[in-house]
Length: 153
Image (cartoon, rainbow, N blue to C red):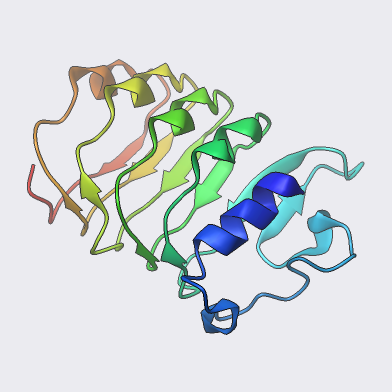
């Protein structure tokens, strides 16, 4: 709950009403019932954050790495800015990482992302990331989708 509350606060840019749908967020209801959150059948493990196109405006907190069971992190089509936190690489169960269409996301692709061994689909197109594509990206054995176009790579 703490990490999700921190995530919410870091992506509202001091205006929580800007989120397109924030049903349940920061309420007393279990976070498994919050909009865009999916948990396992027992409601014990947070598996997915899917907030694509919800008008998030801010940064991804490094504490996201504490959600160790997370398999999906889908934040496309928002206003995520600053850089991709290297701590995302600690999400070793992550299979889907969607950060595309966040035009003000900048910096480089962290080489540490190569530690996410189960990653199947990585989307980072249409952002402002720059630099070289780390060779570690080529080591993803399970990767079937990789979108990096429309960047400064």
